[in-house]
Length: 517
Image 1 (cartoon, helix red, strand yellow):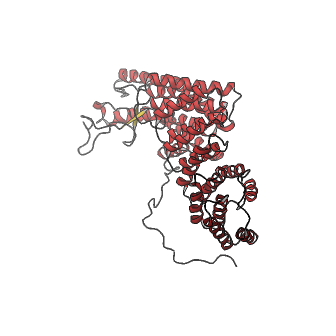
Image 2: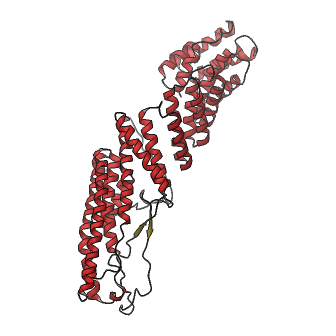
């Protein structure tokens, strides 16, 4: 924070050159105050030191100025205008770089409850700046909160002070105190309806950062009830979209995987898996690699799903009805809502169950024919469910929002990969596992379908990475695409990792090179 001027006129000049919350407070406060103390010989000497400090810019001159004003104050602490002397001393100390002495002097003035209110208010504003210069942000926030408490009923700049205090509390991670300051700001009569709505809405970020989904949902609902009509249209869109997102996450009883309500299941050895295998070698139970994972869809809470989808629909309606407000952020929220409208269909696609007990051994033609029919029916159901999801994600991509476009492309890749994984994880009939010819026929039949599906998945993931690079947008979705490509095409997309992810010891500085002439 730039140091304040020593005199009332200097306050006004420097505040006008320094935009910002504290500059605005000082500018307002500098407009008035009590008359200065009587001009005497000692006062004239102090002012001469002040002029010299301003002319030369010497820090020592400013400190001498502060000492002179402080000596004048100590001669008659109860005299008329003595608080101005204490104030001038503090400002000179601050400009002289003696921040600790300046803080002590400002604090001494602030604690003089009988001092002129205007001078005390200016001292508080400078005290905040002094604390911020040495990164004492908690103390700065306390002074701002005190300023708002003492001057909130009479000064419009109290709102600026509370807003700044809330910002500092957020930066310090003091969520509860940041919320308290924000709600005080909302209740101030000097706060406009639009600013009140924006401030109230911002508390949602604190609940989200704190991981309190229940509080986030309750707060967004209160926002829509109390401020939805008076707030900016983009905030209504954001409230509906984020409320839907929170409800959608809450509807899943397990930790979601890539946003979907899934549980990863590894195949486990079962009795009979090794029957008929050569001695010392277990017969394979599936055609795919042992490292492949299967997932199962976990049922969501139907009530919360309905509530979430209502909020997504409301976000889309408000966005389109209000002339697409919020520019880039509004477009993102619109795309987010559209994306989540397709998520139930995506999970329904994942839920299409792969048929059990397939057997393609040509030595049992009737069984093989029935198995092929079941496989074709499964693929047809999968394709029909996938077409519904595909249309939804294509609509998301048409919004041209970078973040959600990558998400929609990644989802298309996941659809194809899930179908391929289901086929690769299909159980080889237990009675056939020791029969090399039967196993080869079974796996060849499935691989004829798995290959094109994996190629389609890899193409979608590659498109996702290309789009990410073209847009300069890298996120959890682009990392997902990179990770999945590394599994499908490890030779072309080897996984990236740090050679030394943990620094064993800090480097030792052994020499320095001179810079400049």
